[in-house]
Image (cartoon, rainbow over the protein chains, first blue to last red):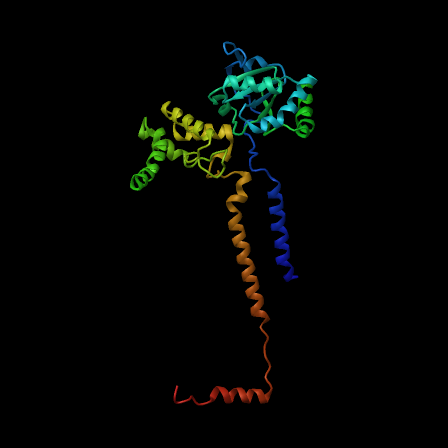
Length: 174
Length: 155
C-alpha cells in the first residue's frame, strides 16, 4: 500500500496543475458584480457638446461596452456586436476608453457602428471607477442600474449565447 | 571622433533616466508616499509587477489617481479600500485573510505537518521492522572472539 503514495501524490499534483492550466490569469473577478454601476456623465462621441449620463438608463437593461480604436481584441469582438445590434434585443452603449475622438469615429466608420450611443472617457477616469483593466470589457446592467455581469475581453458568439443573452432575457422579464 | 562617440554613448543612460524622473517633479514627499503605497499594489495589466514599477498605461493612470486622492487628504488605507472596491483583492500583493484564502495562508503549514507525520510514521515503522537476529552457538562464539580480540598494538 505504502508504495502507491508517491503515485497518489503525483496524480493530485497533476490534477491541480491541469486545472491551473485551464484558468485564465487575466480574468480577475470583479467586486462590482451585483453593485450599483458607478454613475457617470460624459461627452458623447459624435457631438461632444452633448452629455450622456448613466442615470438616463434607469428602467432598462443595457450593455456598456468599453472599447477603443487602439484596442486589438475589439476588432475581434466587433462583428459579434454588429450582429447583436441588428437583432435589437438589448441596447449597446459604447464607452470609448482613452481614445481620440477622431480615431474613434474613424474606427466606427470603417467597421460599422453597433452602438445606440457612444460616450468618451478620454482620461480613463470612468474606466477606473468601473474597474476596467483590459479593453474590451462589457457590463450587463439591469433596470435598477446594478451591474449583473462583466465580460472581460472580447465577447464571442459563445459567451453571448451562453451567458449574456440568457441573462439579459432574465433581467428584462423582471 | 571615436572618443566623442564613446562619450556620447556613455551619456545615453542619463537621458533615459531623465524620462523616468519626470513624475517626481512636483512634490517629492507626496511622490515618496505614493511610491511606498504603490509598491504593495499589483498592476492589473502586467500582473507580477507592482503599480509603482509598471509602465502600463493603466498603472500610470492609477498612480495619478493615487496622487490625487492623497492630495485630497485621503489616508493610505482609504485609498487601498477604494482600489480594492474597484479591482478586488487582486490589487493587493499581500492578500487578506478570508474564507477563500485560508488554503493560501495555512496550506504550506498543513503540508509541512503532513510531511512531518509521514516522516515520523516511516521512522517508527523502520525501527519496529529491524529484524532481531538469532545467532547460532557457533556464530555467537565467533562474534565473541572477534569482539574480544586484543587490539593491534600498532594502532
